[in-house]
Length: 217
Image 1 (cartoon, rainbow, N blue to C red):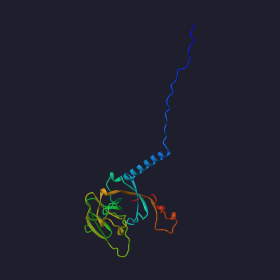
Image 2 (image 1 turned 45 degrees about the vertical axis):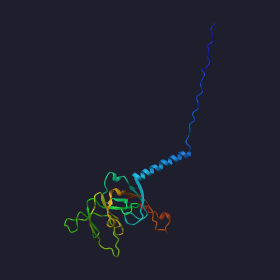
Image 3 (image 1 turned 90 degrees about the vertical axis):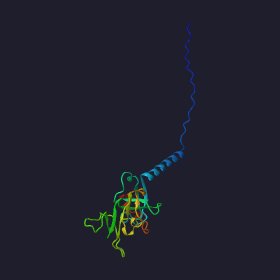
Image 4 (image 1 turned 135 degrees about the vertical axis):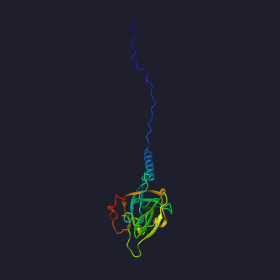
């Protein structure tokens, strides 16, 4: 007599349930903000930094109320060139940032006479020619005459800088040279411009729309 076959299913062992923990909304926002802050600090330190122009020493290139961006890594690959607009630590007080234009390079002799700039020569020399200086702006007013300055020799790893508003700028003619390691970067674009002196105008009329996005040369 044959025995019936047992068709019962094998006993299954219940598995422990694993609980998937979800991040709270607060934690997710906190991590996103932290990452954003770290990225902003890295960008500000090594790549691009924003500055506001508080004075008229760079008129007409830069106006009071212009907001600019400064390229902070370009001089890791090359030295500042004549004509570059640079932001640097003010040699008299390094807690302050100044912006001027590079005029004299390391090792050059700079001489200024009658609003013309001579490099490595003096006007009395027959072959001496002033440098091309399309940036300089002089206000014609009473008491402002022909300027004579120098000659001065630019030390190694240093630069002679001037404001474009030549007779309304405190620059290397007054406080000396800028060391290369004190230069923060090159100004390259105006991203915002606000005329704070025109209080009688509406808010949208005080924005200098035509200057937004203008490259700095």
